[in-house]
Image (cartoon, rainbow, N blue to C red; front, side, top):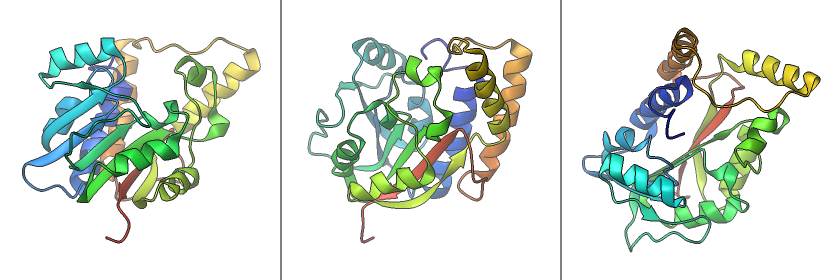
Length: 236
């Protein structure tokens, strides 16, 4: 992640998609307070800073030190579901970007983060989609599960929160990914690594993924390699 997050097509395309999603559904005013839960090596922090004042936590000491040094944000130690210190503050946007699938207790994690939401705040969640797409890649990345749109909405509601907008993304490359996983299973090949593709391939895949940013939060396909949710407190 550290070495790929600036240029790899997946990271670049996802940030473009998320930027549009936040602009359309983040419900953010000026000087918004933003919190990233599990920021990893900090690849999303510059994006989030476009929308407000950013705080973050990260479990990994190595990733925490790197993201602090790169971003200038004092990334705090923390862990889901119960090792999160909001310091008495609440936030207008909490970003949980490809983190929930790593946590044993996803419902308790969402309950904890929900307590950090301001009254009119929203949470942005992204996760890998469809359990039937499970592969050695998921095992390599220590995933606990993948989600459908319905199962993501179910755990959100179980945590006492309300989904505002849900959907899939990275949809245009979905057929290619399905074919690749079928081929891997049939040949019992090792897990696909996360190496940087050759520049022409990286550019082509990034171009396809970037097309979806125009559709973010407006309309989309009923499938994709990832799912997202915009979440708020109930009764709004």
